[in-house]
Length: 220
Image (cartoon, rainbow, N blue to C red; front, side):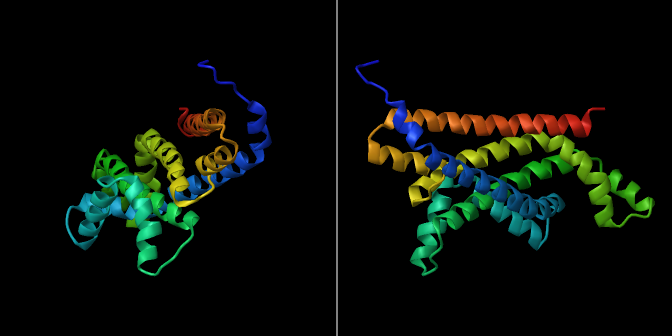
């Protein structure tokens, strides 16, 4: 095609580097989603209340994370903190940035799920002798999780794809590993085609795993 000759053997030789980069991508995805959930849950509750310091804090977080570019957030963590004398690794910078972004989006996803559940559910849990926390965990959360499940999975896939921005701050995640390999071999098409396939496979693995989990949890 257009006189370009593919040399796939070069990609095969660099496969261990790409696999190592893919593992970094998966690690950051899992950690950033877990951190995002832990941060988003209390902020979603605060946002639902509609007033107070918690509501204002959560609103600022959501506005900042959802209305600024992901690239800007990565740069702020890596170069911005560095300019202030706080030098952190590219891995940590990308993890913090994606966790920050996840928390903002997940806050609104969770808030939407909570809004879909009648408030009488919490009162019913209280009438059974549950504390507010128990009522949330055993009555509200299971219903909310079913409502927002696939939106949550979509956010997880989005977080995985955003790890590719780590390439711009020197992180050897999947895109960074591909960028390095093609820079020393000058075989751009081969490496980026294979890398795109890697991203597709990881994304489909997340989606199919989610469908299986959803079927097991809610097959009734």
